[in-house]
Image (cartoon, rainbow, N blue to C red; front, side, top):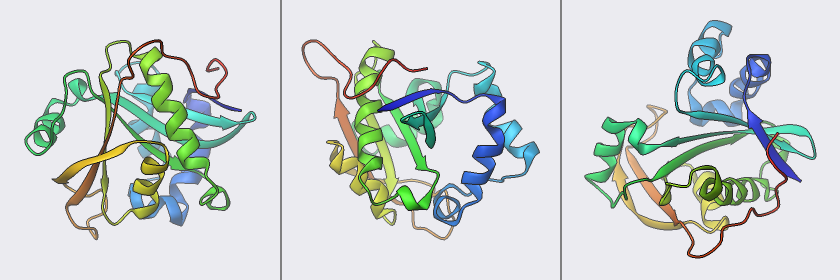
Length: 190
């Protein structure tokens, strides 16, 4: 069972550990000092900003981090992306990582993405689409999006998280389904 809850300050040591692991650090380029983690994750954990940092649990065990936000809360980024691909009003984006490399390549990523996208329609009634840019070099990430049912709608020239990567990004999208919206395999988030 996949569930999730908001990250709290008590989760910061786990995030530091995950973000320092080579399979995550390659793509996230995050300073993992205690001060940097508190600076970067503290405001969302305290509810001081509109972004959601979600700790994903598999059968009660933390396995992943998902960040979910509305493009409207990141107007400069939204404008940069909208100049290159269709970005509907009300669009939401996600970013994600699996903390343990042993859990990658097992289908967990697509399950998490599919579950969080489905939950977005309930959690964010104004969300019209989930739009996710991912660096073309990050094949495991964009394959997870495809396996989760998102479709590639274009490419965009965006700053990479890792300066070693090129600027080319694939852009994936899932639109709000018509009719009643239910959750995939989830229980109510903790």
